[in-house]
Length: 110
Image 1 (cartoon, rainbow, N blue to C red):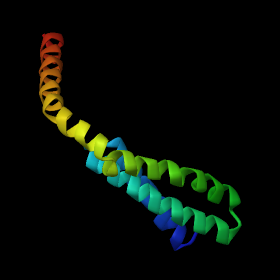
Image 2 (spheres, rainbow, N blue to C red):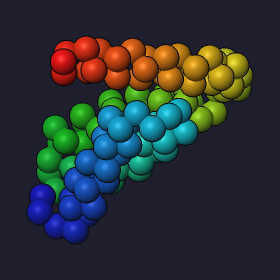
Image 3 (spheres, one colour):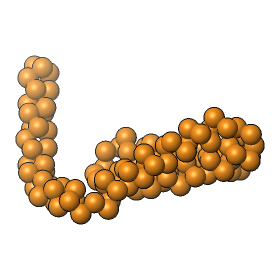
Image 4 (cartoon, rainbow, N blue to C red):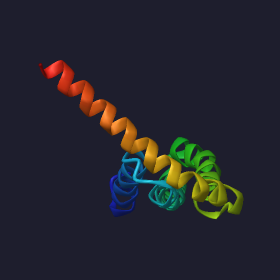
């Protein structure tokens, strides 16, 4: 469990987690889930070929969960429509919250 396949899977897993944690929007999160699907498949192959059955089993469970994430964030036309309608409101709210946070910083700095 220390070959190039495992290193690719480990690095891909960290990159996918970073995409999702960075909260860069639905598209980036969706691509994070795509990457999670790819590395789950790699972990399954690695686990089965090296006798690391727990790794293979865990990723066999994670693969459909990650595929659901791909569906939810990239493929679902319903979710895409909802997010398209929410985007202008979200931008306004984010500006308002940023102004509030800045005002709070100014108040506490005095």
